Image (cartoon, rainbow, N blue to C red; front, top):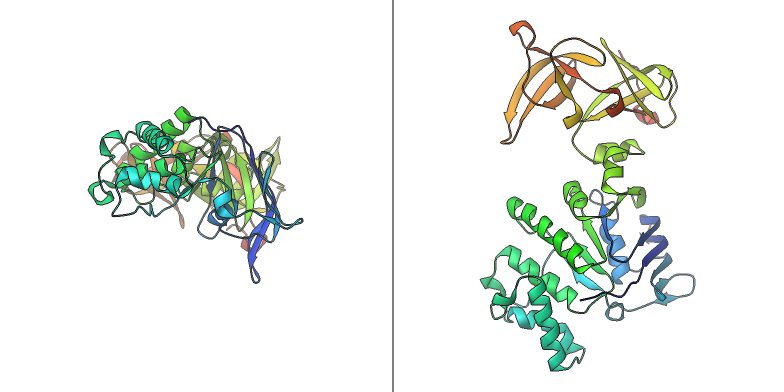
Length: 368
């Protein structure tokens, strides 16, 4: 199942319904053998972008190409039909024919295209083998588990030997435990077969686990793109920082700036953090730190907060604790160390992991 080495390029793509702008100048590249995850909240435009590449939505402006083949070009009136784009499609609903066997579900599209029977047999059997479905070829969809049905849908997409596979929430129909197993299996399959895939998901963990690159969409625009590590560890905007990971937030004002650091001040506390964006003394700002980088300390010290322990929650592999700091709530993993037998605990927020972003103008309010 070797795929043609073709690059998918989307340039300045726009799409709107009436006055509702869904995509606002999206540009991206999917290199051969690469997996790109389209990540974002509901309504961010990620599924619309995928459907535009598939030919199921008609953009108003921009260009889409794979290698030398132009799929869409608004300026020159090019709009290639879906069936001629030769893309592998896997949607949330697996849409399997209930009365056809696994083999026939996978072979159906090849038969419609008039592929010779001998070639159909070899291509379907190869797809079945690659996805571990060989023993299930004669079964009907209702005789399969959800994970097995998912594999059949993926095999059907791969049997065309497409240059790019498009997946829209491919794991959404699976329960939580099977979903974890499936994303590992799907990532292994992608790497083993050298697939080029564009995957839509709203699950950040799924996006990080499966992809080489993430495009985080916000209101029809790309907020940030890069490797999973870049988006998680080096967010460029507050939106990216908040969307990725589980976080603690502290609101206050910038009391001092020094060497790329900002001293964020609130009622009864002061914390140094890494300044993000244009900040100056007196600005309202928000400090953000990942839960796993917030530490339980054994006493007062630099960049530490004295908080009150509210409750703890057992999560199996770790314990999550809820602390109170005035009107704010902070969470932290680990075993609390109460101060002198009471409910007060100290939390440490390391400077390099505590990012300080300027508050949006509408949200700016003085710290008390």
